[in-house]
Image (cartoon, rainbow, N blue to C red):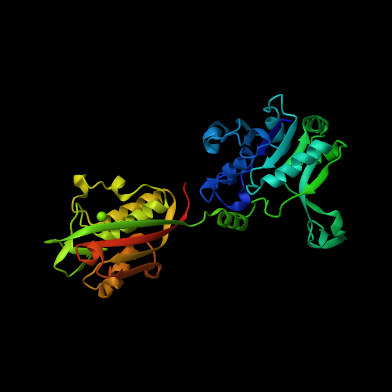
Length: 383
Ligand code: MG
């Protein structure tokens, strides 16, 4: 069995009130179109994909979709839905014997629904996923807004996509169509006297139509938070200032280093970069590069935040621990948190800062070094 998928992405999405075509709107780092294509591209039973785009977008189709594992071609759609489906159908290779037709505006489609439709279309020739109506269903006169009938709920099912058809069944339905506008392909089969079976749809497989649908979809596709950790240690020597998050702490010694030796900022810079899998401080700000000689740690942290922002991430919180035998850091922690919050772009209460000693143990305990641990939490997602 060869399953070919036609993804209809010809709409303009005027009800969303965006100047951009609906299928190109961002949903958590990928467009609606990319997410719909990906749902089929990862499905093991799908052989090939045809994407039907508005004529003005079709030339850029390959770059709008990006790389795919399965063969994927783009074609310009027509004026009506059935014209677009026909254009897509003509691009299917000869081996395809089962055709799925899907709306790009349903990016939540999952493998289980696709499987159910493939199985039923294979058995019956034509199948649609649908949801039983849960509310009482009224027939309403179009212009008056007056209820004219209550339709028995058990008879009403709300059709979704993908809809599946044996190749011959779909070809015959398209050939036999009287040319009336249809809103789905099952209608073509119904009009040509064929039988369409219903399989269970999925409540999550919504069609993104309104601005509220779009907001909900963006929330659903927002990626899970990412956590990064960082650690740094510097020797303490005479003649150097002890700087933590840009705050100079009065003390007779300070950290030795190519930069200002701000261990707290260095650890947190690694945590921020690490959470985004964006390398580490040594890779971005090499300690042999003269550009970073005496560079303030807060500057490096600011640059790291810019690097992860470029990838679509936002820092949402951070926590740091500085390990130092002397002096006590408590009087400086509020100012440290304030400066870090400003550079990270978060509220002060999203930044924790603690100081502790090493109980006299090891080099840090003997006062020969200062160390810091940091954790950063990022939200958003790679673009
Ligand atoms: Mg360092």
